[in-house]
Image (tube, rainbow, N blue to C red):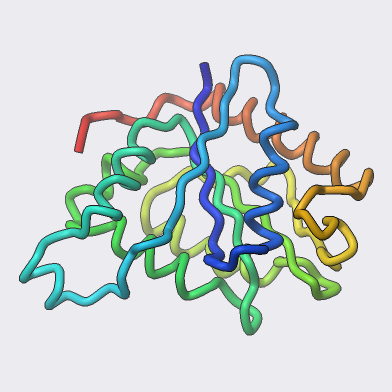
Length: 192
């Protein structure tokens, strides 16, 4: 079974990106599963807090889930032409302490998608993630792109994906990413 952990970079209840992540489940090929992780409850990174109290429990739990996965799917909003601060903050915490980078991130296949009410999707946010993923030693999948634009027309009021064109794109994207993950050497999975 190929296990992917998906994380939405939005905390908003009616987030288009969380809706996109949920919609991904219906497009998984046989022999794969998507587990949905959350960045909710992760405090702002503060080195003094880390020194005094260690890595917060919410971060430890998410690190363990990532470590048990075969690949990571980041679903990123785009704020002010870049990545969302809450998701970057979570990744900063997840990289603490630095010796955990090798078990959480290094060599792990990763894909980045996103949805935006704007006309350009999340292309700038997705590009902004590339130096971060490279620094962490991840294996980004470049076999496709998925930037959902005008998301308010793509999802209905309940957050259901209703656009057939986006469904077709999502289907091809997810299948391509799963194939990439399956062909990649397995990331190390020691327990945290």
